[in-house]
Amino acid sequence: MTQNSTSKLLNGDTCHRTNPAKTQGAKGFVKSHCLFQKPQKRYRRSAEKNHHVSNHQVLYNKRFVQSFEETPLLVAVLTYMGYGILTIFGYLRDFLREWKFEKCHLAREREEQKDFVPLYQDFENFYTRNLYMRIRDNWNRPICSVPGAKMDLVERVTHDYNWTFEHTGRVLKDVINMGSYNYLGFAENSGACADAALECCMKYGVGVSSTRQETGNLDKHQELEKLVARFLGVESSMVFGMGFATNSMNIPALTGRGCLILSDELNHASLVLGARLSSSTIRVFKHNNMQSLEKLLRDAIVHGQPRTHRPWKKILIVVEGIYSMEGSIVRLPEVIALKKKYKAYLYLDEAHSIGALGPRGRGVVDYFGLDPTDVDIMMGTFTKSFGAAGGYIGGKKELIDYLRSHSHSAVYATSMSPPITQQIITSMMCIMGEDGTTLGQERLRQLSANTTYFRRTLHEMGFIIYGNKDSPVVPLMLYMPAKIGAFGREMLKRNIGTVVVGFPATPIIESRARFCVSAAHTREMLDTALNAISEVGDLLQLKYSRNNRPRSEDTDCYSYLESPQDH
Image (tube, rainbow, N blue to C red; front, side, top):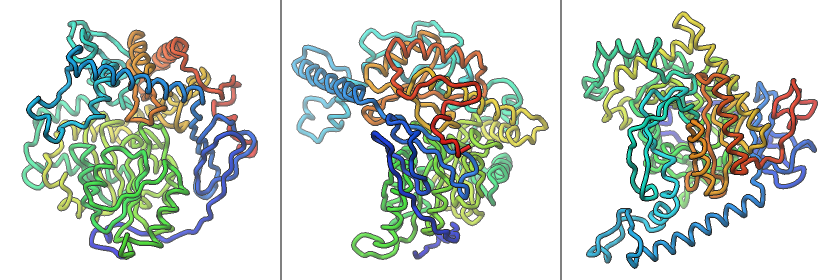
């Protein structure tokens, strides 16, 4: 594989050959993708579609457990029927709007423009008008407090079926926040972080009004970059004012025509946009499926570029640490093994995992006990665990120096706000224990305990939950479209703020509620939320799981999935 100037900035390590293991399902429909997986045994349940317990001693230093229980057939059929009925009634209402029997509030072309190329895509408009609008009140709720463990919401009402909203002037106080990415509880308006940010604001002001290359390069930015590099265990790092732009603007600087990007099918929109803007060839592998990834790598090496069959200038594997809609953790040891085997490069997005995983809070690399230098480009954001904004890229010094002059986000974007910079510095030093306290370690332990307790209790209640047992992102499956809006409204009635997600953000039959566990949540808050979830689950008949069984005192909700020799 030939290298251009940018590919020389990334390391290609020696290859250690491994043999893919064959997988088989014990009974029922089972999807289990793993390069180093042992055959499934009789203890696996038929209703489980993607559950993996990896014990490969060379690659994993701990049990790796991820569960994706299969959608019950009846629920899947009823979900399709629900969308079908909504679609039929949607076309009927469009017919009534066309003949002026019903008013349409959505933007549309004027009469004199009817013969022009449409400005709006018809089906997207159709979906917005007839499906999304019916449950629109579950999103964009205005908050008038710190989005901590509890928050205050501005009450609003609608008199035209969610087309418009009016504020009543009433505030819903102390709503338990189960939706924000406040993993370590640093989104707060008191304490060391808030005090340091306020002091920095008084000294530097709020904005910089310039780019880093001009007069916007503060000493605080340089201090943060050195701290981030130490935190990650890499040579150098660079920070950016926006997390989304960190991906979308830096990937085009690293790859271009003649390069190949292998992207997980569930990667974030910022990664997808960055890959598209790069003009590279993009191929998508199945989510966390190492056999699918290896097949694409092998084909890329054997066949090269289309038509010319020349070797690819560069092959870049793009994955996330924690997938925010699935709650799953990337199989990083296996990805690194494949990366080394086929001499590819690895781009790791740790937006949700940095600060939330690992004994030292240093992300998925720390979680698996891996060498940070095995990841060529380490990306993450400060918007979740650090309670701030922006993102970073970490790696070799040559890589960072290259990005400083070639990344659009570095050259053209305004520098990070000084108080935001200070918020990150203070919270990161707290996590590292360099603030002279044990607060960081206490929050990491509290987050882990809260995650285990919350996931285990939901499982025991009979809900289908997705993801890894250590992931603070907890998707609870709703499936049917009518239950998306109903769940969000019923939870808010019980003073619990949640996030509900449906098609097209998820597969059509996999609508869900997504909970984000925080170290700021007390056991009392979690019990209140869990009781409300159970009550609403009974009301809406959401307890679909067929794997529910009572637990003993010394087992967790995943232990039935392991054989005796796994312990």
